[in-house]
Image (cartoon, rainbow, N blue to C red):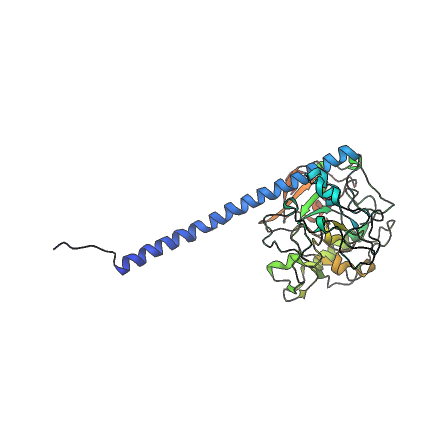
Length: 359
């Protein structure tokens, strides 16, 4: 009689254990490879946006405005057209551009009926970072964005002045559009775009200790600081700005807030002093807390990100964020970049010299 050999239970368990160990060893490598691919796509998206801006400049001789207000503003509010809508033809979206009614933004004159929905409901992949692990819009069905424009340096000392506005997207009449000739610090030293994780639908309360803390904004627990109100203001000092940031970083992990709804809200929109919607600031360093000044201008700092808010870029990339500079190059800026270097990369004509090895 012929004996049939078979695995014993112990042998089977050993084989399963070996396979489990191999999977545990390989999984981080697979995840790292996937993240590298997502990060590469993020870089390509930013390069495409940078190239689109340069094509826009070649046609108009100026950079696109951060916000077209008061031109093209909605009859019911101060909302106007943001920078992504302006460069639609340059990112091969001429059909969307031609279907957009520039007499409105997303609501009619009564603020009761949605308009321009063909454009505003369309989610463009070039405006989303693949590493943002939630595809849910902040306020569905409106489409959102992860790439935001550089709005300048710390608001506590001259955010609204022409000197500290690095790329002319701010639409106040005293500033207006600018061209590349205004980049006196050098186009390779002036931020143009970076990235930010958009807010979550339903406006949930998020703790400071949560991995999602970057998707909302927190109140600065320190004393209110002076905030600029008019474009001529240069209120505040660098020392106050540093104290502001230190207070922001000291927010306890148990602190909760639900101010994330309008971070990356509707990509076609922009408002003159609502920074979170489509812009970031060179105040707090990358991936630090979004923090608003409780003594901020017009009482809008908390929800919208006012002039004296710290609105740093952030991402799910390990250790930093991608930044597209005004020359079109894309570089990875580490979270560990010094505050002074980060501020310098946000200005266009403040006379700083920044070495590429400093970030």
